[in-house]
Amino acid sequence: MNILILGSGGREHSLAWAVLQNPKCDKLVVAPGNAGIAQIADCASIDINDGGTVVEFAERNNIDFVVVGPEAPLAAGVADRLREAGILVFGPSKAAAALEASKAFTKEICDACGAPTAAYGHFTDAEAAKEYVRAQGAPIVVKADGLAAGKGVIIAETVAQAEAAIDDMFGGGFGAAGAEVVIEEFMEGEEASFFVLCDGENVLPIGTAQDHKRVGDGDTGPNTGGMGAYSPAPVLTDAIAERALAEIIRPTMAEMAKRGTPYQGVLYAGLMIEDGAPRLVEYNVRFGDPECQVLMMRLGAQVLDLLLAAAEGRLEGTRVNWAEDHAMTVVLAAAGYPGDYQKGSVIGGLEAIAQDSSNMVFHAGTALRDGKIVAVGGRVLNVTARGTTLAQAQVQAYAMVDALNWPEGFCRRDIGWRALE
Image 1 (cartoon, rainbow, N blue to C red):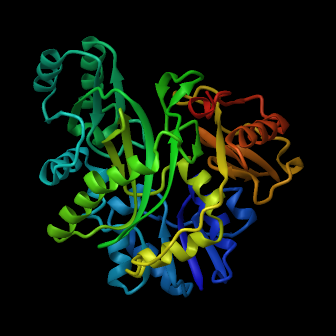
Image 2 (cartoon, helix red, strand yellow):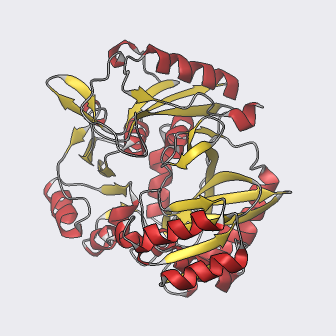
């Protein structure tokens, strides 16, 4: 079959890498792709947020199956346009994608189905939001309601920090995403990511991971889109996963179906776990980035079969074949990220790294210029390894990092520390 993956990051590179291993894949196109993806698949420069453009491209290129990587095309209704055109697609409708596109909507769903989550307030006015913060005290969490590329969350240690975050959001610091604000209680515990496939009715767990959001070692500094991840996450035991399915995910799916907006695609539940009890931090309606990279590394060729089962409404009876292995990815970012950073620096040493089913460098923010791979984004590379233990995967990943020659980049040196302690 001919397959189109939408997106240009490390998530999409890892999806492409896994899908290509399946003999069902005859031709793979990634739009727009990046320099790393271009080494394994055809890349197409189209506007992936325009449903009409995507449909026209898919029809012209005889595409049988479209996998939507990022959240923006989903929130823009691209999956709806593909379904209307009779093209098989993996990804939720615009209405269902509101689970990520609006934090207030997710809270409303949790309230309706009784899913445990943080206490919150929803505001369209800065002064009312500040009054709520003063009444609640700190630490407290301030979130832009809409899509902010993983950066619209401020964990405020003081009331003053929370008020400054509110001013920043309502002042346009996060664009349209901050036109409304959700303020939540600060939840204690350990955070982990739980991924399930959904076909509108059935759910299938496909893995756990733990991301590292803060930019610096020891979880210090500002939040980022993610500086590294590993899978599985030991904190998310089988018992806790079952509890999350029973108390959070299945009730959410039932509520979405009841509202006439059944959810189909991957649902990424960010969970806070304390004393064995999971609470929902937030939902994402796509694979996490960089969590996708470690999941793809562990799942391999079966990924395509699983995505097709979800898209075709036949998850019931589908099984995931897990190896007893571990995977880790370390994000290399441009100096200055998540603030201002320079673009265009040359990355050396990539060609010397042997890449196989246990060692991969997935590209995120890269481009090919004058025959050289250059950095064009904040998060640039995802150095990913798989081993029989997490410690082995960590050693392999950092050995690849050290083989690169990119003085303008940096990474955290403690990915996996919670599990390895």
